[in-house]
Length: 310
Length: 317
Image (cartoon, rainbow over all chains, first blue to last red; front, side, top):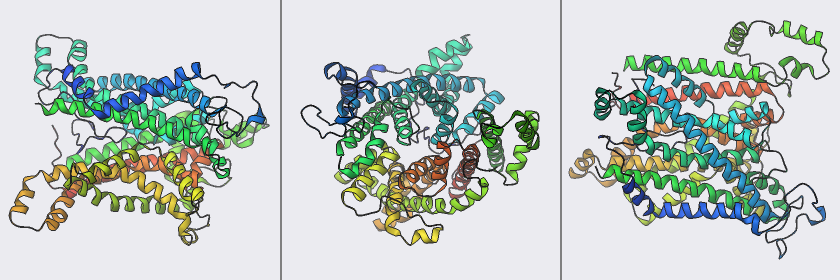
């Protein structure tokens, strides 16, 4: 995909079309305009509000609502209790309070989502920028590596990786980063290549700017749009990946908790009518993913507003 | 066009070689060693040395790689540690079931999402469009396992309409005799794909609707039905070709999850079982096949696009 690149549409790694940042004239980004479009967008407001509520629920919740989520002192006589005054969402099959477990489980999902999004964005941006600036054989080689890794579906790679490394939260964060920087790298490289030939970059170069100055002063600010959109979506993608892994029983082993694992272990009990073991975690999981996707859509739309004003 | 094709095929070959290198690296990342995995933990050092000599595992790495490629080219993907059968035999048993599951759900998804996308584009901003957009957005966000579990919870556990387990026949033919058990696996994969396809179809049709040739078609008095079928549908289909080509990795992920949930005896379930039993030959054989299929799928989509749309000019600078 070097100079003879042809892509009819621009799907990102996750298959979402991402607008080209910078625009044809490559004007400097007007941050205020984007911010105004973003805050005026109902999707953005809903998404941000929900994410804030979730952060409060998961991190402040355990401070206000004390439950035993450790390994010691669990009473197995208290397992599978129906929701009542002492346990608003009942208890699970090992006696954990479900509401408290939802809070603890949400912590790891959110931590992982943000960590992977940040790491992915950094690695992908640097890799893509290097490939785009270097060009030629170096670029071709670097991009074939990306193509090769993209040919392996993420779940296939992840299931092999958990057979090689023992999963804990940090390992999963590193593995997910290893598997998901590829899309960002492609996007950033594409941006850099299209920006490289713009007049303002040529002008900067003629004036004697160094490559790193051109990079940080001209290219990164112009490519920031696609990067941010992608980062938002990758929070949701990482949460999906962790919950899928936990669902398949290959995630982080107990006593660690996350929503995917709660959903799986509750599933067998659904036949007994223990709805509280499945639906609360299912609802929180889907709400979280939808909230991040709404924010991603809203960021993209507000960048579109800027593009439309040209 | 020819030059573009040559370059594009050249790139595909490089990526296939890359996939081979990647699986070869993964073989050597296997914890312990191959001899240890096959002979068991009580194997003596001398037996392991004999094993390594027999299978060429004491050779230098580059020579092992050449041997590996040679084996793969001849269809030898090794023997499953866990099931004690050749990997290629296991794949051959399961591949038809996957072609059926993935094929039928993709066709169904296209049959639903193409008219839906056009309807939404024509009625853009209306109540129907907004409702469908909200539905497909929600579907698009749902993880495959989440969606499968909810379908089981509602249709199999709460109202007992369909079976929560896929048919377990030995051949595809015997599985087809239990259609009620096939509904949920196919429905899950179909709806997951509908979400992606219809969003692209909608935006593609919106682009097409703004073209001048549509105004001409309407101006010359062509009935709206013909305008939609002859002009809008045909032209908006083009990007969908690429999307279908690119959707294979996502479909594989979906297949692993869906086959695990419904116990559908396909490649996905085989892969999942291998992942829970450290069965490396199957893990790597599947990776190789999926990787090559993805590369070929993308290449085919690119070429098909060029053939279907003569306006496309592959620029080379």
